[in-house]
Length: 242
Image 1 (cartoon, rainbow, N blue to C red):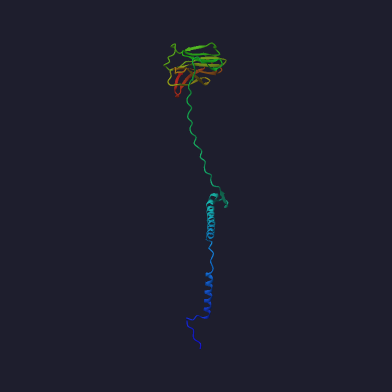
Image 2 (cartoon, rainbow, N blue to C red; image 1 turned 180 degrees about the vertical axis):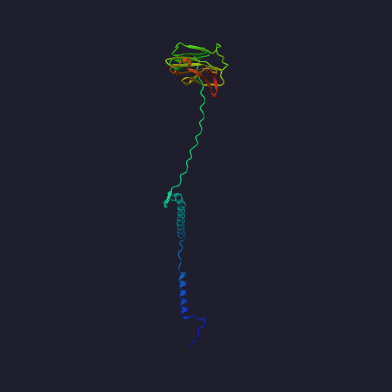
């Protein structure tokens, strides 16, 4: 007599499956799994992330450099024209202003020291006054500054003129001016002639000037001069003859 199956009785197929499951479980318990290669996995992950980051940065740098490479502008013909970036403007240093050269002063000579203006025309100073020779007068000549002929407290200029073969030898004494004598200007019918100054050391209050020039044809030596001005270092007039 057949008995009906209840829910508690497993079906034949289910019983076989259950036996297989138990057998596999027992086998699995006997297997020891190998350790996972976590370090290798982490290294590989870092390589992948680095490659992705490098690719992104390379693309970003390329985008930044493109505007610096060129600027595209529409040309008149419709085709784009390429212009290079403008070069930075160079700045030249501002030249500094050079200080003005100081005004010249007389040549200081020792008592009796000879000064040669040109060959044959020599001058020297002593405490008594001016001494000189010229091609016209090879014998020494003298003009005193202590005999009372000049008043050294009042500005003045004296003049001695000699000429030979169309050449004029000019010289004289200057004295009494304010400041320091600097230069001598001789205005003549032939133009302006600049002479030179000599003095003794120690600020004696007088000095000697001299100049050499050529006589204009048809003019007499005594009418060659027009005005003589001794300037001081401040640009003013130390003394004048006219």
